[in-house]
Image (cartoon, rainbow over all chains, first blue to last red; front, top):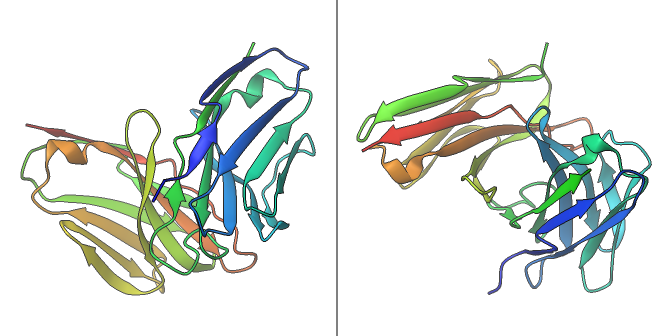
Length: 117
Length: 109
């Protein structure tokens, strides 16, 4: 079974631009969560989608948005990029909502490393 | 004060030693997760706990809900256990996940 895939793996953008990151969950998984990881703040929860609906949202500005498609693939978008948006963006999938989706394992993708210059 | 505190921040030990990583939290939780992150960023979910103790191979996780404390133990540690271990409580008020800063573990051969 293929794991969670994220594209692109690396991305360099400049301030003011926008970016779209993609996440394909494990086949059959309907829940996708997004996280941001920076050296200063550590891991932070961005949002969670289940069956095309945003189920939960972290404390990030409106520049951060996401969506989920009917095939459970998810995208997140960051508009008007700032230097502080440089981070590793991780997505994770599970069968059901919640970090562990009711099981012991949530499956993380390899992440997209975004650098904003 | 952070809602999640992990200790120690960094830990270096010899192969074979018994390792304990602690996590204290100050919020109401429905579950607590332990994650492992290897160099390069890959994250693996190790455990989800809502009470008691769980064991998987050489890893043991415990939680005391009343004391708002969880521990992750590694028996017979091995260099491949070298990673960052992250405690992640799941809030019972809204199901959101918050994260500890992580414990960087380095096992020497």
